[in-house]
Image 1 (cartoon, rainbow, N blue to C red):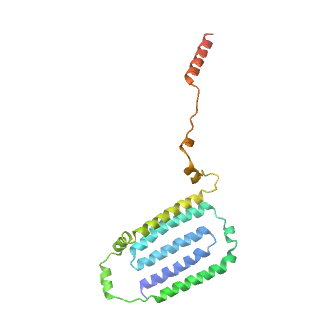
Image 2 (image 1 turned 180 degrees about the horizontal axis):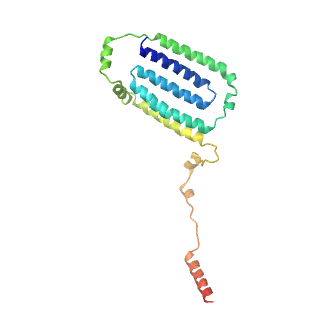
Image 3 (image 1 turned 90 degrees about the vertical axis):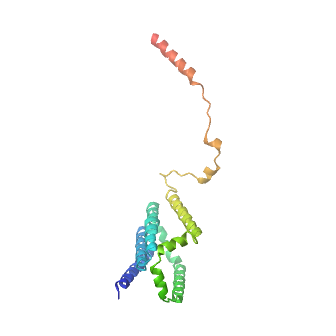
Amino acid sequence: MSVTTGLFYLFAATMLFAAFRTITARNPVHAALFLVLTFFQAAAIWMLLKMEFLSITLVLVYVGAVMVLFLFVVMMMDINVESLRVGFWKHFPLAGLLGVFIVLEMASVLMSIRVTENPEARSVAANVSNTKELGKLMFTKYLYPLEIAAAILLVAMFAAIALTLRARKDSKYVDPADQVRVRARDRMEVVKMAPTMQQDAAQAADSTEGSKK
């Protein structure tokens, strides 16, 4: 067994263990950290497959941005773990059935794939940059899906921030519907006041008379 094969089995076993602990950990923070470990192992496997761009993208985007956001949301929302466990065994049969269905579906897809070696493909791949080819596809053929994914991530970030600041005593919350319905005359109110010049002159005269006396 070569070194590459040994590293692949090591990364794959660690990734399976981390993925299993992600769904079985009782603490949400621990589950998020195990998910970070899963992403790191997947990035290492992609690096072994010479997919450098996808590996670095997985680390920078998912581990460096998305998972950090998840951790902040989980820690700031102060989730009651005991309340989440209520009704777990009630929905377990349906969840288990769906899990078995997904496993069978993935197994059928993987078993139907036939791997054939093409010597010409190796010579072409040696002279082609996969990062350059992925960039061409992302910003030409898949430009609209890329923009839609970016918009979904942006909306998810705003939603996470809104969830953390909802129903907190120390937060200043403004209803967006009230902001939309506001009118210009409601923002500013003109108050009529008596002129202050005459009052100041009268006070000055009273003060001078009092000093003379």
